[in-house]
Length: 309
Length: 261
Image 1 (cartoon, chains in turn cyan, blue):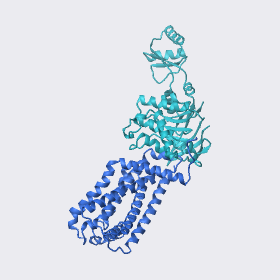
Image 2 (cartoon, each protein chain N blue to C red):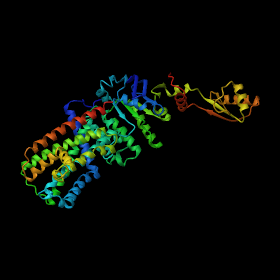
Image 3 (tube, rainbow over the protein chains, first blue to last red):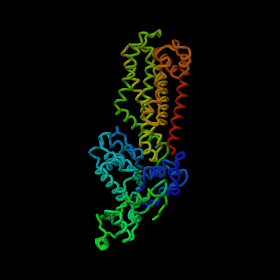
């Protein structure tokens, strides 16, 4: 485990932000921290990247303690925060060379490294323009490139695509996937379930400062159940008869009954035949596949019980 | 990782500071508005005092010979205010987090801003003196007097720049940094910069005689106009060294506290 966090507690004044959070990330994998606003995602990232000390709990990154061996930790990680950290009045290349020099690369090596990264992130045409002329997507790419100058083993990305248009988001995702294929470990936070679904090997769902659920995306989805058929009826009496027929519990919508399904056409036929034989007219049928949204909603709106898969 | 050198140690600290100094100077140079203002404003103030108020102020000498040191200190205050704002900008943007997650001494960012501040002041002071000579300023100073005056001003600028850096660190935003540094712009007016202090009401007279700017101005004025300065030079030196020490410690401690998690 390249990232090992155990029992993290953090409070700001009387506001408890983290309440016993555990996190483990295997080297070369992508972990997504998912959670509603205020769940403690950014605080977690700030503790893991040595920016904030935990009140209680320990974090080891590549074997180094984030509090006692902060400098060693900083030698193996890099962080890309929510606000882009670039100098608007420097060019893209100058920004990168500056970080290279701070990493004590010689001037020629720092320039070479900058050029490599500019090529990799498709910024060569803009490299000698000041960053203030860059688009939002270009800034994010340059910001990510800044984190890679030091060739870190673990990269932390705090909401890497928030505020980007769909095409810039796809470009960022491709860049992140490239990193993964080169063996870099990535910990990212996101509010977009699709992003977690696309990028992450494992997802940790945080709610109220602790882990509400964790596992692979498939495992999390199966936790909220498999496929479902939603049957809509014209009157409530029909819903009640159908509920008795399939022995299914009533949902929140009084005119809709959801019944478990394996997603096959045969099952759909059987359900419709049963309804016709029983003389219950159904208005509409839709099939429903669980998404991470369902997982997210079912786990963050109910309670704070921890489910480990 | 082969490309990442060993960190820590004095040589790396120097190299980090040089990198950040290069950055701050580049940013100052490209921030054209601020740079132009830091030169134009003192020139405007000097013209205002020499041509508008100066005729009515009796200092016993040519007014321009009297006012130049005050203008120089006034423009230092403006330069320092912009330093506080650039520091606050770094502290409130993502930049400080980026630097703090690198294996470097992140306070190099302050060294960078302070050095750039000194460089900007050097430039604006040179322009002010040049313009003053064109407007009729006739210094009567030997090379050693110039060197002493320059040395004292350098200490003063350094002290004010570190103070500004400290204010930039505690400011919650760029705007509040500019408000906090207001005092530095105001102090020269309550000194012997523009009028002899004995013309002020007695309580203001006491304030202006005992604040750091008056002895610095008196010393620079004495050195440049070839009049004896007596013990004022030592008082000015003591103020500058004391102020520099305090503001350096102030900035460094605040920075440590603000970045300690």
